[in-house]
Amino acid sequence: MKIALIGYGKMGKAIDAIATAKGHEVILRVEHNTPQLLDKEHLGQADVAIEFTTPETAYHNVLKCFEANVPVVCGTTGWLDKLPEVEKLCKEKKQAFLHATNFSIGVNIFFEVNKRLAALMASQPQYDVWMEEIHHTQKKDAPSGTALTLAEQLMASVSRKKTWVNEESHEAGVLSIISKRIDPAPGTHSITYTSAIDDITITHTAHSREGFAAGAVIAAEWLKGKTGVFSMKDVLNL
Image (cartoon, rainbow, N blue to C red):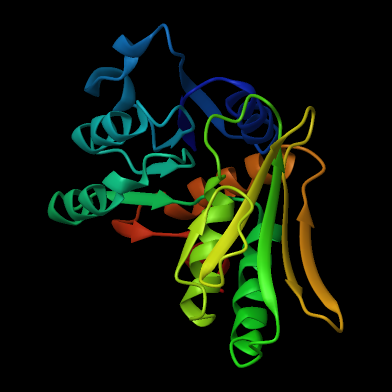
């Protein structure tokens, strides 16, 4: 499989190493100082593109892939206000787009655990709930995209939480998400339900970027040759 990497920071390099080890060919590496490579001539040679850049550039990068008729796997977070527009364009142009806030297989299983626990706690109003996420200091957005996915899942079941804030709050209807930036943490997410009697906490801790990078390559392998809008739930059949 021929892969175009859009974004060649730490994640891009990790994806490169895993893809190459699996026998794929990375034919294009687009860095922040080489945006001119994002054209049909260069992108069009790839079977699939993997995009990990910045919230400011992701939207336009995805559209460039659509123009080049190349399926795109996107892991950039912090720009999801434009996601509905991208999904609409993808369907109209009959392209392929797969976005995930986290490509780790473990995290996607954790998402399912989170939904199940939230469903069980929906009828237990004696429990308050709050979240914490820890990432490295280079993380550009807070809360993390993964934390926002977890929060949305939780609030879909626990109706007593109406909104979230990225700070400590003791308001009954507010879900607190505490963000910490500590090197070299690649990512830890915890959800804690607390009562006067006991606490219940579920936690996912990443040990390295490899899990995210490996999941992105698996997603790219799965997406090749398809059209439509997809997520890791489709890839992992969850």
